[in-house]
Image 1 (cartoon, each protein chain N blue to C red):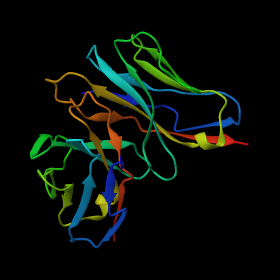
Image 2 (image 1 turned 120 degrees about the vertical axis):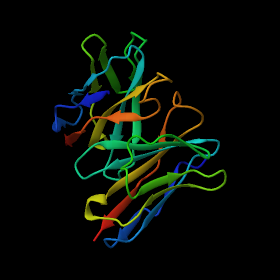
Image 3 (image 1 turned 90 degrees about the vertical axis):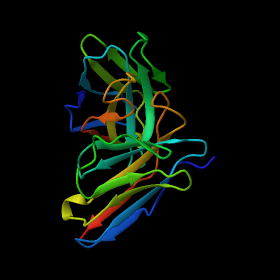
Image 4 (image 1 turned 135 degrees about the vertical axis):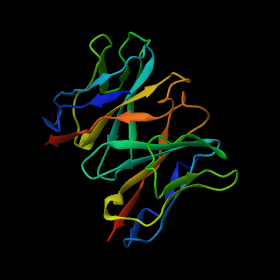
Length: 114
Length: 119
């Protein structure tokens, strides 16, 4: 059973461009969580999604950030008009059902904004 | 809102010795989960150990064990017989079990402790 997949592993964007980060959960997992890790800091929750639903987006910045988890395909975290402060590692985790189950983390995507 | 605090930015230990990493948290809930995650240089988050708040017995996983003090809201990680492969950043994390709460589902992490293991 393959683990949580994230791609790309490294992404470089210039200020003002868009960044799209993809997360394929483990097989059978229908819940996805996105976290952001700024340099020298812990992970901060961004958003919790179920297939076709956003359960909790309390950690998402109000502007420029959006997330989706369609019925088919990977979950996407989209950052529009990136700024230097968006440079971070973005981690995706998945769980089989609800939040009572273990979250399994992907390897992360390191976004660098130049 | 729940908070998790790791007061030791860095710790070091000699190979084969024992080290304890500290974690305190703040919550008004009575039932929750606590975790320790390891993040090696590869950045992959690896679950080390989990504790359920309603269980009084401290969790143990091989060389890793916790000291869970619910009243004091303390959750320390003890690593016995430290190995070079234990060198990593360690994060303490909290997760609510309250399905009606605003923090349901998400993990709240501490700032992390960098552990160095000396040969």
